[in-house]
Length: 193
Image (tube, rainbow, N blue to C red; front, side, top):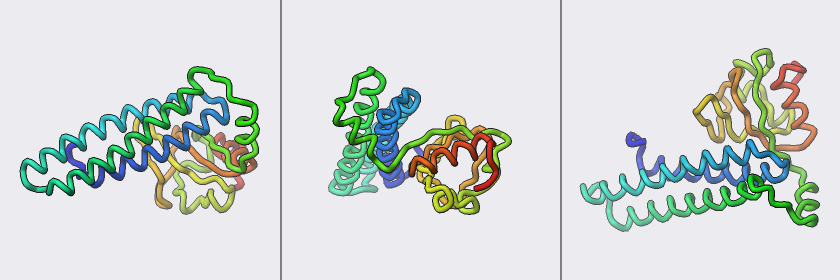
């Protein structure tokens, strides 16, 4: 993490905390402990990023590479992202502790037009080896890929040139019928996008 600039770390904290909120709510919506556990893993990463940015920022002030007011701004932005990630973890904690949601909250959540999905790409999937831009999943299925996990590596807000590989875990959001289509594509049950 030391080779990243403080600006890059602030952006990474922002991106990860945004994803964590999406994942935390989806874990509750779909009663999915696996997604809630992903939030916990990401929160640990955000904590490490936050500690790293504090150290780097103070070092840059000490070396007179960064003005004190600029350092304070960077640290405040990072702290806000870290607090958002803490809040996302608390949301995910509801799922992990099996807290029953109030029926009215459940009803309002179920009425949402947006679903969150986590799906593993199988080796025979038509998605393998293709870029998101070529696949046009958002326009063809309605599902937007918000993150890709490849082994221990995460790709947040993947760009159109990002390729999908066998074994990737896709995190997506979109309409319910689009979710079913994405799952069939990822599992190799259909080849028609």
